[in-house]
Amino acid sequence: MNAMNTAVNVNETAQERKAPGRPRSAQADEAILDAVLEMLSSGQSVAAISIEAVAAKAGVGKATIYRRWPNKEALIIDAVAAMKGALPVPVGESVRDDLIMLVKANRSGKAKRYGKATVCLLPEFLKDEELHHMYQAVIEPRRDVMRGVLRRGIENGELRSDLDVELSLLMIQGPGMMQHMLNWNPSIREDGFAEALIDAFLRGAYSS
Amino acid sequence: MNAMNTAVNVNETAQERKAPGRPRSAQADEAILDAVLEMLSSGQSVAAISIEAVAAKAGVGKATIYRRWPNKEALIIDAVAAMKGALPVPVGESVRDDLIMLVKANRSGKAKRYGKATVCLLPEFLKDEELHHMYQAVIEPRRDVMRGVLRRGIENGELRSDLDVELSLLMIQGPGMMQHMLNWNPSIREDGFAEALIDAFLRGAYSS
Image (cartoon, rainbow over all chains, first blue to last red; front, side, top):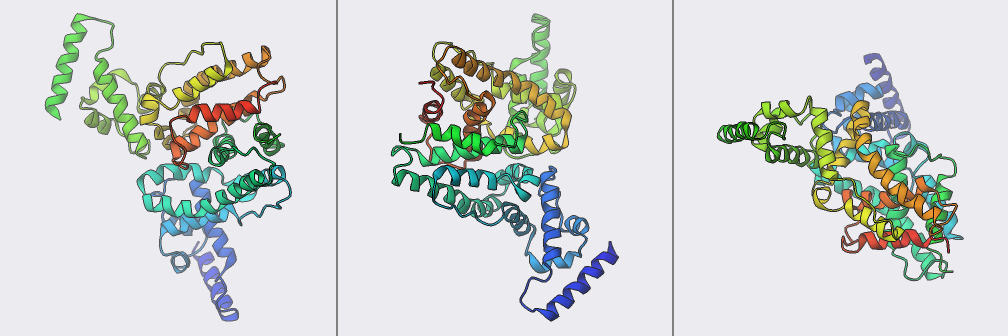
């Protein structure tokens, strides 16, 4: 492990010289964030995730982590943000297409691979209000994107004028969370899930 | 705490003499199960919940717990079963009434008070498959009750013939889990939640 640490550190120093101001090592950053997500999604508590354990798993030195993140909480929230990926941008043509895209975005890439990380953070939020607030700051903008799609549909008459936006959010996000993260209904195939869910939701939400 | 332990133990001995075969002390049992639920729903991990800590919190002796439960896992699953309460029995007249009753059953009494206990068990299930199986054995019969209501509605023509029962289960149970347990949408009032959810679901599920 020490050999690898040294290699990464040398590499970082080279990068710093070449391009000051850029991330020290995008590869090391990703290895660190993936290590955190791997630990979280296997059920390890925040208390069990030490900077030392993350460094060992990612194959970097502890100093590499401390240079980039002020504390463990900030590192964990950054890992969740990396898992969620970039904020999705709806096309704005059909509510159905946009909602399917948003549901799929929650179920692909790192969100699919490390989906249980969020589940494993829930007990931590009960014990650490600050961590919960940091997490909300990551997910609230994503929920706002879905609110925007629904409000646009209400305004242009595609959706019922009396549609409850907050309840609709729960109806669209709750099933995926329950099924994908908890594996409670493995009988439902991943293929076509987003389309089936949104079509069932929209049958009751369309204005006509 | 010792004085209380002695009092409960004396009480139990008296009960045993009066009514052999009955639970040693229903009151002590409830105090023990409530102590477990209180600890779970405040975010304590299964590892942190020792029989000793439960006994101290419930005001009973450790022997009282060991007489009734073979191990911590059995105690935790019994606590979850106590929180869920008796299996609800649908009236069988209208799908709407039965579904509202089932959603309300998940959000009242101990399920309301200790609702976060389930959330806090989710990371444990990733680490302990046996505990997960024990939990599934508690909740699967409850999910079967809802499946039965939906299937009856499909058979008697009240619901669409092509309704996806498993997806419907997620659409009915996911929102409540997300909202009630995680407090993600406190703007949705508890009052009228079950009715609003079931009406939104049924708008897309009725056959007409």
